[in-house]
Length: 498
Image 1 (cartoon, rainbow, N blue to C red):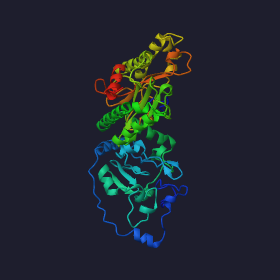
Image 2 (cartoon, rainbow, N blue to C red):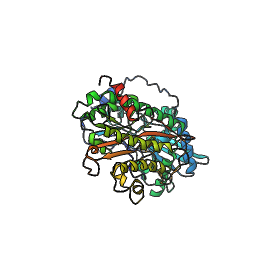
Image 3 (cartoon, helix red, strand yellow):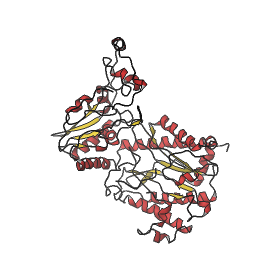
Image 4 (tube, rainbow, N blue to C red):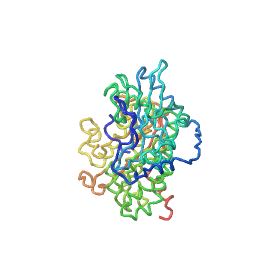
C-alpha cells in the first residue's frame, strides 16, 4: 500500500480512579434487545442446559514468541506497571459495530489475534524478577446470568460463546483474571499505558511516558522473529492466490459498470477464505483511477485497454498481513506506452532491491529508486532540469510523478512500526529479520500538461514484500509475476479463452 509521508448493556465495575472495563456503552434503542422480562421466562431459559465441558486447548504456536516479547519489554521498563489494552469495539452506526480488531501492540504481546476479546487488558506488575503479566478479560457468563441471552453486544445467544479464563490461560500461556478484577489495578506516576487504545483509563506516567512506551513497542517490531516471518510468508502466499482469482475473473468484471467493485469482492472472498480479512482496504484502481494513490471507492469500470492497479493484502488470523501491488492490463497485453512506463517502474524497484542488505540505511532504498525515476522522466522530456539537477534536495521535480515514499515496514500492521523514532526508521540501519515493502510508481494525472497526451491517465505501481537476510534480501512475493512479459503470460494462463 502506498506509503504515507508521516511516520511519526451490562453492569460496569468502576472505582474512583478508573473504569474497570471498556464495557459496551448504551446505544440507541434496538428491537434486538426486547427480550421477555418475566420471572417465568428467566426461570425457564436458565434451566435444563447440558453441562459444558471446559476443554483446555494446547498452547498456540505464537505463545512462546509472545512470552519472549514480554520479557524484552519487562527488561526495558523495570519497576513500572505496564498496561496494554486491546481496545473496545468501535461503533459503525446506531447499535452496530465495525468488525473488531484488537490493538496491534496487545496482539503482539499476548499472541491473541482474530479471536481476541474486546475490552481486554494485559497488565505487567513489576516484581523483583521483572514483571508478572496478567490478562484481564470478560469471561463467559454462566447460565444463571441473564447476560448470555439478554445482552446483544456480548451475550452468547447473539455473538457466540466466549472462552473461559482457564482456556485462555492455557492457550496463551498467560495468567488470566476476570475483567471485574481489573478495578484493583492501581494507577500511579510510574504506570505506563498504550494510550491510543486506553479508552477512559486515567493517565499514568503522563503523556510523555506513555508515548515513549508506545514508541518502544513499535521499535520492538522492526525486527521480526521466526514466527512473524513465517506468518508473512503465508500471508503473501494467500495474497498471491487472491490475485490469481481476480485475473481469472476479468472476463466478468470487465463487463460490469462498476467492475472495480467486483475485483474488490473477488479478492475479499479469498481473504475471508484463507485468512481473517484484508489487511487494509483493497485498492482496485482501473484507468485514470490508478493515479489516485489510495483509491478505495472502487466504483469505476474495468475497461478493456486500460491498466488496473491493484494494491491488496490478506491478513491472517494472527493479524500479520501482506501488501502487494501489481498493475495489470485488463485486455491481457500492454500497449507500447503502458509497457514503457511499467518497465521503468520495475527498473526502479529492481534497483532498490539490489542494494538491500544489512548495514545500509533504510532511506537509501528510496533514494535508489528515485534516481531511476528521475532518469526516466528526464529522458522522456518531462522535467525542466536534468535528472542530476532534479535529484538535488532543493529541486525534486521528478517527485511530481511519484509523491509517496518507496518503502514502509510491514508486519502486524500494514504500515508497521509507525511510532518508531526517525533515527530507528527512516534513518535506521537495516538488520536481518526486517520486513518492508519496495513500491515505486509513476502516476501521470489525466490533466497533467507536462506529459504527452498518450501518457495521461496512466498510473503504475509495483510493490513487493522484502525480508532482510544475513547477507542480502529475499523478495517474499517474487512468485507473483512482475515483468511485463510475465504478467502477460500470467493473464493468458488464467484466461486461456481470451
